[in-house]
Image 1 (spheres, helix red, strand yellow):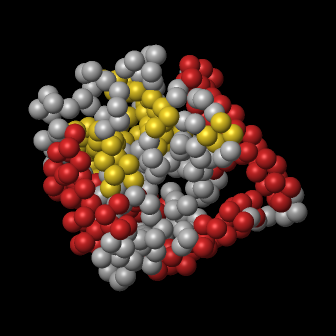
Image 2: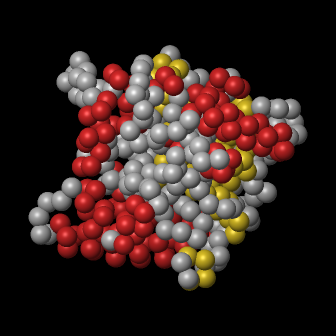
Amino acid sequence: MKPRRIVVGALAKKKRVLPPQVEPINLYCLNTPGQGDGAVLLDCGFFIPHEIRPKQAHPVFQTDYDALRSLSLQEVAAGLQAHGYPGIDVVISTHGHADHAGLGPELHREYNCEFWASESEGSLRLSPEDAGFDMRSVLRSNGFYEGRFGPVAKMFASTEKDGSPGFSRMGDAEYDLNVRRVLKPEEVIDLGEERYRVLEVYGHSRGQVLLVNESDPSDMAIHGADQIQKNEPPTFLSYSGLRLGLGWYLRSMDALFEKHPEYRQIRRIYPAHASTGHLDRFEKTPIENLGQWWDACSGKIHGELETALETLSTGPMLAMDLFEHILGERADALAAKGMNGMIA
């Protein structure tokens, strides 16, 4: 089970076309090549399609989108050819953040592929009669009305019929996609020689999809998206409303291991924003499998939650301020790299 990986964004980063807040992303071809079928691809890459782009310069992601589109599609085409796929049949969306789902409309234009996503994520409209990519939903579910993102929301804001903020300055704000399958937790995706179990983990998004390759029970692998990163703590920094991430993340990961204790023995993680390979380190502590990684992660998160409780006991605090208080110097380091809390 060798990973069939396509890195999207590396060329754009080299040419300084990729916005500094965004990292290149690993896309994975999940089905076995060489049978004449197009790829079943996990995630898309970063982009802001012109249908949902602000009519003025984007307040967060300013770049040459024509160049970004060309370079990203060049990387996708080269990767498909290298792995032996004639095109793309299906894109599975782990979650609706722009660095994972934004290139979807461009892939749809180029390959006429269909899209699968979880119902709980809610960033793709998931009925065949009304199948689309809804940026309003993505922005609402990612904290654009909270704390320091308030001014960003106001740049788009109008009033919709229900009285909620709208995004009329984003063009039509939606793009029709061929969304054909709603992924359910614990569902098994059968791709012939390879089978993947669908998991949902909360904390980074409303219901991020993780996939475990169970084709060979003695050598399983997990596609961890942003929630499980090789040798690193998880990316849990979605802090809007329901998804103020750490507590939800702990609960859903603990539930995952309770239901599937065998997953603790998984040695191979294929993350979204890091190199692939065997787990070997968490900070400076050698580890051998996913269970040991989770023990280290959860211990670290519990410590941060204790800090949060101490902080909140002094009075209410905006989620972003709480986030910065908990992370301290790490938040400053992210800011120094030009990364804001939404993307970090």
